[in-house]
Length: 149
Image (cartoon, rainbow, N blue to C red; front, side, top):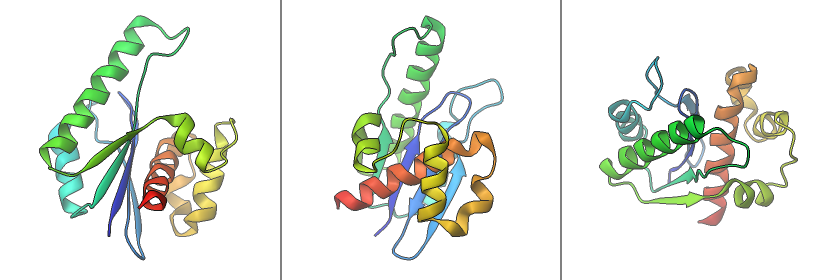
């Protein structure tokens, strides 16, 4: 079985695939000016499948977040859900508090990187940079989903 996880973003994000004995992680395909490349994301899912179930981090407006950034993230979230629907892959939306609590993930930003490297040491080279936090979260979201099966 293959489980996938997506950490959403407008300019950044991550996509992970977990098989029985394999783990792969990628940057979310986005355009240079922002927004998700829906066709590239659908292709990525197809090339790494068939995916049995995909978990997407549910997005929502946050207090003190600007209107423009809220709109952009919501727009990207819609693009991601559309790309997944186009692949006919079953998916579940999961809120950050739910999946993070299940992983006992502390609030600090580096916690996801540390935990992902513990679970997937073979991917440590792909989780080195500060911006690789999105990849780490995608891996942990997929791991959460795999644990729900």
